[in-house]
Length: 103
Image (tube, helix red, strand yellow):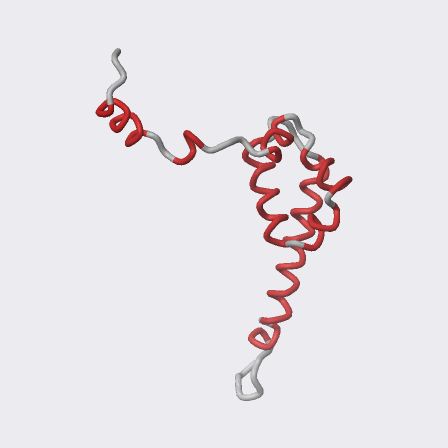
């Protein structure tokens, strides 16, 4: 097949961002089951304190890991617990009966 500008244009139109996106080091570590250990050993401060970074790392681990990550469930349940505690606190006044409501 001869390479022409028309062929290249047609080929480029079929490509999506994910077809040409580089593989990030985090994805490679997740595929080998090493990302969680890397984050907790070498990037603990960012992993603990930066919520957006932590969510992105969770997403990568869930999508790319080929094996079960034992510590991941603990951190995800901890985040869920914090969110539910906040929800419980915010909605506490809504759950209390008003004085005018019959019991």
